[in-house]
Length: 368
Image (spheres, rainbow, N blue to C red):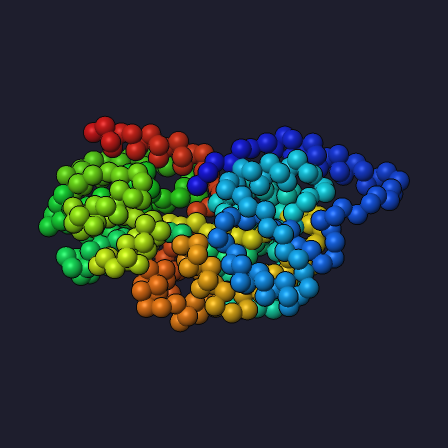
């Protein structure tokens, strides 16, 4: 995930000026080209919206969809703050744990689910998730999710209901993980809040919890064959059978499964963390009604969600996608409902404290 380049001061200046204009005499200005009634401007990531789906939507609704690709949350934020009250895009694609900055800068408008007849087709785990509701409002349509899971070679580890298996002596030297990410999971395993949401204004409590997770990982350091950073590293260790167990993000594990390796990814009973990409209607969007038509069309059929999963590599948020995917695709990209509900999606709350403490503890684990 890329870091957001914050510029709240600029945003406040822009919107402050816009508010002042409300008291000024009304001036008729030419309507921008992007505000045409049959147009929808979408800023999103490559491979998120399938072209076949877009072609059908444009034909059925007589709406031209103009896609602007992005590769960074900060670029979207900077674009919106620069354009102020006259945005050139109607929809942006924001990760849930990045909501806070966009919302505080008045860059998004609350989502009106009453305008989305197919809202019921969204998986219940995403319909009113705590991370998606800020200041009493929902702010986007969840479309694709990534999560951390327990990956295992099922030829050697047939069952793994708990993260405890990562510390089972019989698998000594046959496990691997990203230290910073796995530390927050260990905090959950030990009964603490690995996302630090409940530690606002409680640095002493947060530090104690972090220290216990750090010490636990140091105590069990002999379980680890290798700490890794890139998904390709854990993939190669599984392929070589250097490891039988590992903490893995869903993408690298899904690739192994699709390639036919005997790998299974699951969410143990203690839970895990994930992130979710959402489509968000921009504040003052010139074609907001068309945005809602797109949202409704995305949720209309699980085939759309399946196509999004196939080409993006992320898991769909839409009901019934597992029934559409082929067996191996389903193994790679879906979870049982009870495991989906164990995913805690990253919050935008208290991230500075979390990052500082986890980064320091990570360095201490590696140095021990």
